Length: 297
Image (cartoon, rainbow, N blue to C red; front, side, top):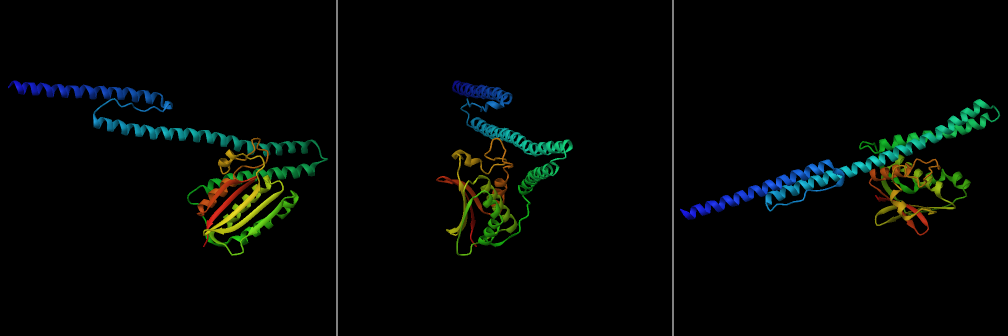
């Protein structure tokens, strides 16, 4: 009988100890959760002070949930900052041509001597503004999941030749020497002809903006891939700028005076990837290179 009483006492003691330990752990957990909820910006997690295996597993799971929520919060904050920057850039891009248009309208009202000249300037600024708005609209459409693509087998060399010829006068005006190296063997890929034209136009327009004297287009086949290589001078571009090249509204011009929305390369990247290709920006010595890649058919 004595042994039974001793055994019951020991069991009761152990159960009481477990109870108070669990209660203390729950109380500590509750306080920590209240602190985390009050100061989510501190990115804290619950400290585990328990030897109970099941309680430890529960707290570990709660920490996983907190960690995932904290990552989402950080991502949301970064996106909020990015949206604010984009809104500022959009406002700047729209305000600049509008201010110019209004200024020249005022000048026309005040004088008749340069009326035709001012009207031409207004027309050019209005076209810039139209281009900005069109790019914003196109980006919103292209980013959608249901953007239509008319995929077909395309001869890459033919498309490149047609697009480059259209910019002959602009290259000549800027005295840019153009070199085109196309593979003799026909290179066929699956793509949307209209959108491939848009991509090539965007990349050539970008090269015209930043080329000083030389622009090179190469096209060749390597390991079953069709490579299209656009190369112009690197100028003052730094290594860490490469990661921003395809970001929306990035122009590489802090003053944003080059009349560019910074959307051309963004749109090109989205379209290339929608057509199962890849696009990469890199440096080759003193040259800046954009490389497109598609699987050959």
